[in-house]
Amino acid sequence: MKAEETRDGELADKARLRQQYLLARRAYSQIRGAEASASICARLTALVADLCAEGALRPHPREGGAIALYRAIRGEADVSGAAPALAAAGWRVAYPVVEGRALRFYRPLAADAWRQGRFGIWEPDPGRAEPVPTEALALVAVPGVAFTPDGRRLGYGGGYYDRWFAAAAGAGPVRVGVCFACQLAEDLPAEAHDVRVHHLVTEAGVTVCG
Image (tube, rainbow, N blue to C red; front, side):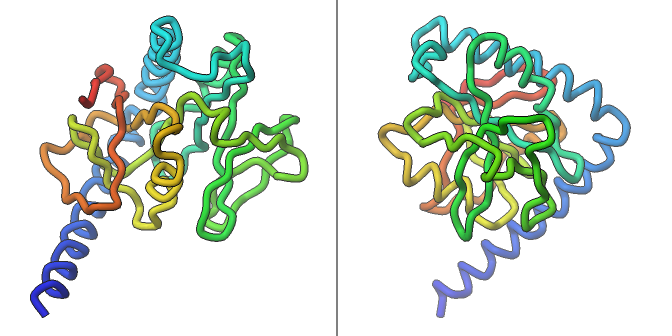
């Protein structure tokens, strides 16, 4: 009984925190979203270049390496502005597609090769996109409701990214959390299946999460 009560309490804490940070993000996005997203895109592009120069990203773009971005919804930081610079540097730019309870990544082959997925998120149409396997992804930009400086992430509750990262463990890509500075938290509840990010990018700077 105590385990169930603890679990219920953790879920209630997460629900409360989601509401708190989603409200903060929505208000911030309405005022500074475009400006902050532009700064985030510049910092993300620079981080990719630095990590690539250090040899921390594998595979290299010359070897068909890919970077995964996401399409923003509900006031998220918009990283789509980073796509042209990443492509110009030789990276394939991929986006997640929800298939059942799993994530798959695809690179759209045309400007109109998009569809709205089950959560209303724009995602590549697999029929007009190139599948990008796990081993080709050098870095994945991860959205979230809130993050801590040590890399903990509060998602939306579906667990899609956590399951995908857990399955990719060992050969997985660099994980980069992306959010506005107002979404940074001193502490967040964490469960055994939660996967931390390696870096955190906001409009205020880049954090190495240790």
